[in-house]
Length: 249
Image 1 (spheres, rainbow, N blue to C red):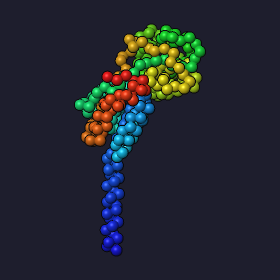
Image 2: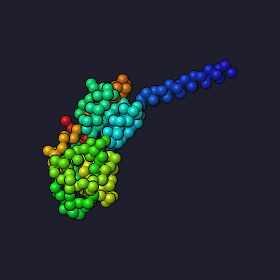
Image 3: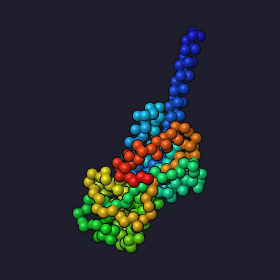
Image 4: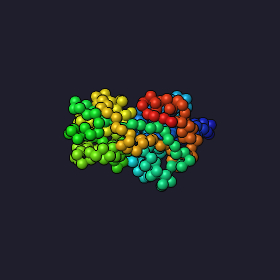
């Protein structure tokens, strides 16, 4: 009986050790919705080289994600679609300032299924409904609203704007034909099955679209998270970003 008890104890200790190791190797990623495919591919590539690492991924509007981190949601690494929400977390000392850096860039386009002739911002008032991400929490929507206002068509669009929870939802409305089109990132529009890019928004009409990356204060203390951040800065990672239409330094 004592021998059996000792064997059981050793087995339980082994199970607890393996479980703790698996938990310790988990990396919680919080990233802008437009990065879903890129991050899914990058994490798959990294896991192939580092089998002991697991990933927990959370995608959405950058503002919503930043608020979740502020409210205690688990996150080791944050990638925003604008510097605004990275600054928001930095001001609250929730990200490690030494790890903040540029990850990628993007371009704003208008995409849709409409048969109407739409080739520039000034053509948008001729349409019935246009989707954008909610500017309060979605950087793509903020860029879109800035471009609309700088084009001088804000009053003309008025109630024609349909607000979406994130850039992917805005594109979904365009794909389904629920709106004439949507102001979204080029990387999202390139993956659309129904909607097509009708024109690119002049870059002079909005702030540069930049995706900053950083480790949270808790994530910065984990070696496996720091190692993954190095991978995301590698040429291999940049090649994946370029494949999906993002710009890299």
